[in-house]
Amino acid sequence: MTELTDTLRDFVPALLVLTVMILVLGGLHWWLLARRGDLGNEARLPRQLLLAGGTLVGLLLLVLALPMSDSLRGQVLSLLGVVLTGVIGLSSTTFVANAMAGVMLRVVGQFRPGDFIRLQDRFGRVTERGLFHVEIQTEDRDLTTFPNLLLITHPVTVVHRSGTIVSAQVSLGYDIPRDAIEEALVEAAGRAGLEDPFVQVVALQDFSVLYRLAGTLNEVKHLLTARSNLRKSMMEALHGRGFEIASPTLMIQRQLAPDTAILPEGQPANPATEPGVVDADAPESRIFDKADDAQALEHAREQLAALEDRDSPERTALERQITELEARLKTRGDTSEPGADR
Image 1: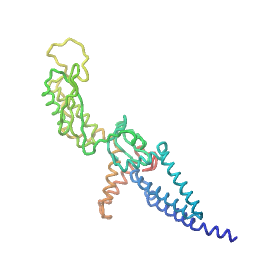
Image 2: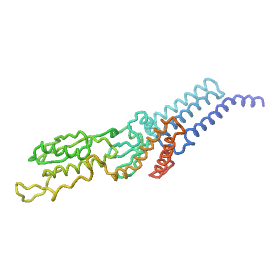
Image 3: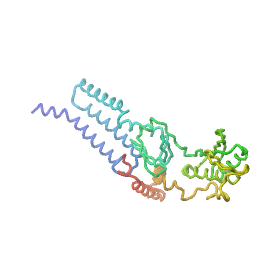
């Protein structure tokens, strides 16, 4: 009986450490995650890492509190180190790799929700950044998920949120003066709302000259519309001056008078909008609806965190906006709880 009592007494410190660890980790889980079940992946990631670190520290304290000899304790700690090293070593082929890649993406901060990115043959706007995956909304309004490891091991192109270059190419005949072409294309870029336009001669082809028109687009949110408007303006500007477009190559074979040009019948159509004005019903508002909400949600959370007055009307309005955005995001392509990794 005395030996049993002594044994139980030796385990009291370990039991106390285990009890405290369970209570602390349970409290941290409630404080960081459970009480805010609608947290997005962007906010959940650092909290999950904090819980994982707390669990590791608790295990180390539990080993130190167990009644064992110093040599045995050293062997147990060595075993834990080997296991941890093995997990890290196998991370290139397990889900741990995606978690580590997710941490790296957060540290680098190359993109955030709402940004346009291109990965391999996929292009779209970021809607979520999770511990294991990144979700984008494509030009077809579909949601595509990439494992974080794929974004680390392959080049990712991110459209600069402060502005990007929009360009289009067109083939024109050798009989048209280059100066006149450049003047018409620069005019087209201005009508499409692009700044600082420039024209390049890309190639001298067998039957035509390939030109590239480019300009700066400051509002990248309407990138798809800007690309389309640029091509529309190019056709209107060139046809309006009587320049025949030969892209990619004219293959029509018929007898024509030497001075006959192939042009659309009638006058060129007038631009649908004023220069630089984006239609309120632009397709991006329907294609990237979830990405728009994700970007607005992150911006609202940043504004809320910066407010110091807890009773201000602005804080109440931001909290209401965040609630509405979270509810909308939950109904747009989500198949799990808001913010949960899928």
